Length: 144
Image 1 (cartoon, rainbow, N blue to C red):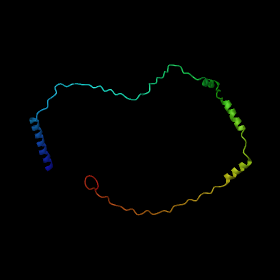
Image 2 (image 1 turned 90 degrees about the vertical axis):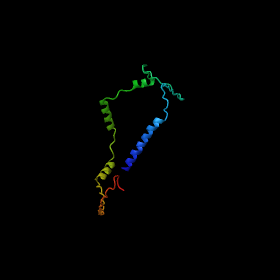
Image 3 (image 1 turned 180 degrees about the vertical axis):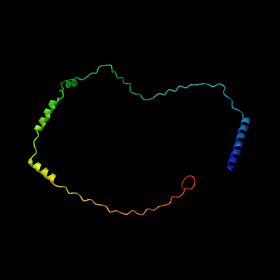
Image 4 (image 1 turned 45 degrees about the vertical axis):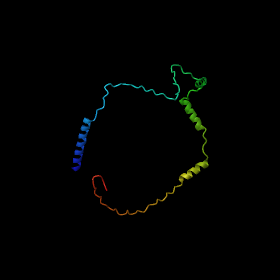
C-alpha cells in the first residue's frame, strides 16, 4: 500500500501544480481567423513510357495465302473401314519370330527362380524404463 499512497500524493501535487501554472502563466494569443489553404501537389516523372497500343478488332482477319492453300489441300480423315484395312495390312506384314527365339524364351520361363533367404534380426531387450517424478511449478511464470 505504500506505493499506492505515493502515487496518490505525487499525482495530486502534480495536478495542483498544473492548475497553478495555468492561472499564473500568460496565455498564448488565439488565432481567430483560420486561413484555409489547399495545396495541389503535381508529381512528374522523368521516365518516358511507351505509347499506348490500341487494337482495332472491327477489321476482318487477314489469313496468309500459304496457310489458306495448306488448309484446302488437307485430306479428309480416314473412315472407320479404311482404318480397319490399315490395321489388317500392318498385321499381314508382321513376320513370325524364329523357332530358336521361341525355345529360349520357353526355357527361361520354365526355370524356377531361387528365393532369397531372409535374414531375421535378433530381438534385443529394451533397457529398463526409468520413471522420474515431475517437478512442481515454482512461482507464477513457469519453471526456475
